[in-house]
Image (cartoon, rainbow, N blue to C red):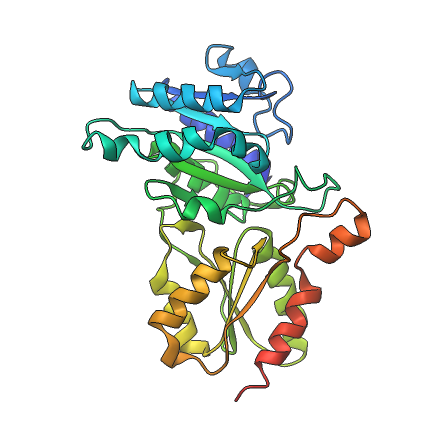
Length: 326
């Protein structure tokens, strides 16, 4: 099968949906002629024109709110907010409007829109362009939260998000945009709420998101040399969360490590850990471990930033400690 980068896979999902349904429109900053800051929308302006690929001014609250209105009136907008950091200026539109309109009007209004954002440190972009607070959106009823880690998943989940009649927060990772993987040419979807076991193992379950999936797979190669067999579970969507697959894996291995680039306090890893503690505690042989970013802003200094990002350097000691429990 041919290979695409993560960015190309999302681009193809957008293109195919736009060809199939003229109600699909794109809005955001620099998404037109420039092709998006990470080139995810490259070429779409030439193909679909300015009426469907619309460059917006630096006014996130305005154009996200505009997309809520467009969705309510029958369009299917996909809006890009350049970095997750910038969602802070349009939280009223996201939390009070986008997430609530369907409920507030007794189901008579639908908001079929996708909000594309990206997370992740590692590009020297400092504390206002490198955050990973995607867990915040899990806290808001009415929003789907999607977290692809591979090009295959990115395309399938994007198409599913666009076709969905509910508002979707589509969380990409900026360090994954250049990662390559097999992607079918045809249109396909991946249902929300279905995790995937990226690697089968018997000793420790690692539930990982985004770039932490790739890092955990690298870890598994090192761990295997020391006789530790890791199972890697990728939730793929955080809301809804596939509890069944996670709990079945923990029942098999008896150990759980949750790896996410968000902050440790009140984060994705905290929620998954709490769920397993409530529903699968008698299957555990060892305490649950979380490997996340520290509860500090992302440093600008390259050495400090590399120390800040959770990676194999943090995962390997953690799994070794877990194996000390019988």
